Length: 322
Image 1: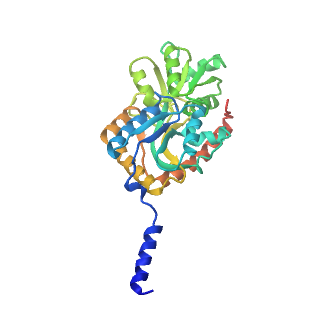
Image 2 (image 1 turned 45 degrees about the vertical axis):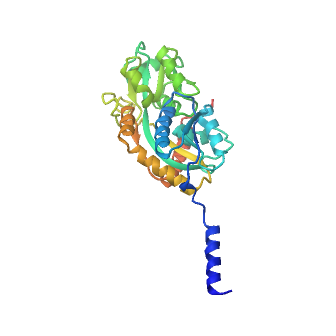
C-alpha cells in the first residue's frame, strides 16, 4: 500500500469513528419539557417562560408536559427513563432534586440517571396566612400555635417540598406543633389558604406575590436570611425573632443521563443567554427569585452538596414521607 492510499484510508477511518455532532441539527423536532407538578405552580410558570424563549431561539416547539405527583418524583422518573436523545428535559425544584433521595425509595438515582443541565434560580418561600387570621407577625403566629398545639394547619406543594421543609423547620426551631397538609402542587394549596380552608402556607414567592399585593393573603415573613426585592418591607423569619431560620428553594433543569454532550452544551448555552434577557430578569426579580445560570458541572457539584445537606435536615427535623 503506497503512502497516498494509506493516507486516504486513515482519513476515512477518522471520519467514520469521529463522534457525531448532534447539536448541529438539534433540535430537528419538538422537545418535551417535563414539569413534575400540575399546571399553575411556580415551576410550571418558570418552565413556560423558558420554554417560550427556547422555542423562539431554536425554531422547534418546547412542549410543556405536566406530570405531577410524589413530590415531583413521577415526572423525574419519566425523564430518567426516557431516551437520552435531547428530546426530553425536565425542570424541578430543590425538594425534588435534593430532598426526595432522603425521603423516598426511588427506582432511579438523581445523580446517576439524570444529566445536570443548568441551575436556573433561587427563591425563598413567603409565609402567609388568610387575612382573617389573628396573626400579623412571626411572634403572634408562634404564640397562637403554642396556645393551640396541633390545631393550625400549614399547606405545602407535597412531602419534602419547599413548603413542607420550611414548615417543619419553623415548628422545630419555635418548639410548636402545626399539622402538615400536603397537596399535589403549590397551586391547590394556595387556593385553599386564600379560601380559608387552611390557616398557614409557606409558598414560593413567585406564585404568591400577586395575591399578597391584591390583599387576598397576609404576608408574615420570608424564609431567607435577606429580604426580597419583590417585598422589601417584609421581614425575614430570622429577623422576626426566630434566629438562625433560613430555607430557600432553587430550580434547575436536567435531561436523561447519557444525553450527548454537545446537546447538553447547546441547551446550556442557550439557557444562560435566555436567563440574561431583561424581561426574564424583570419577571424573576418581581417574583422574588434570583437568577443563577452557570455550567452543567457547577450544577452537578452543587446538587451533590445539597443532597448531603438535606439528608441531615430530614434526619434532624424527623421529616418522613407521610
